[in-house]
Length: 229
Image (cartoon, rainbow, N blue to C red; front, side, top):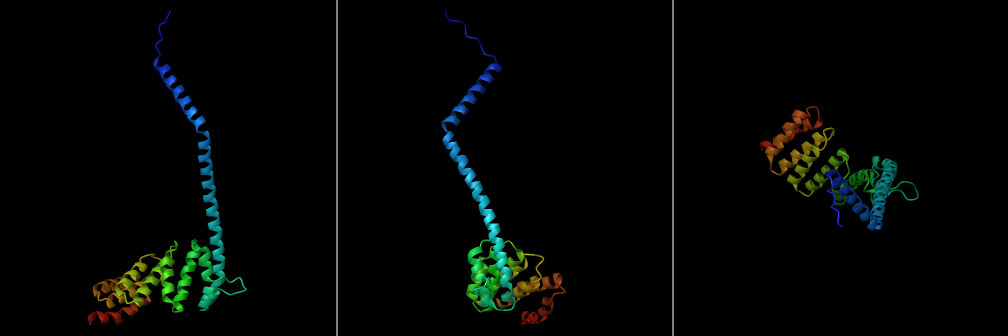
């Protein structure tokens, strides 16, 4: 004899759905346990790889800083070839070696600028330009130097308007850069050569207003004569 089925209350229905959902989830986990374990293992490996990479990069940056400090005596005394190549049989690693090994670190990026300056002083302008353009460090002063280095190369190539734009860009990288008035002056000079006198006048006015005590101010008058010709 069939008995009348008991009607479930709302509370019992909710509890029944909760139990059903729990067992479905449990069943899914059991069925896919191996796959989930693999995913978890991959995640651990990725995390460890990131930690190891960060630690290795920090160590490389420190090593690059040490080697860069050793090299500075050669650079400061104008021995640019030795600064680039290093000194055989000693701990003096050249800038080329530092950049090759640690170019992706912050100190490696700084080494690029010193290497570019060295090439520039040796008259190897193409090599210098490549390094200035390749700089991607976070130091604003070195970034401005890199941009100004590119500007110098463009002026050498007689691309005066492009050189002026780059010098102007360099002057606005950091408010703390003492070379800003010089960059603005060089930008103005290149604008004059490019025939863009109004742009040059604007920069001369800015130098007089914002850098009244700079040596760049004293150079303005002789270039102002060119604007009147």
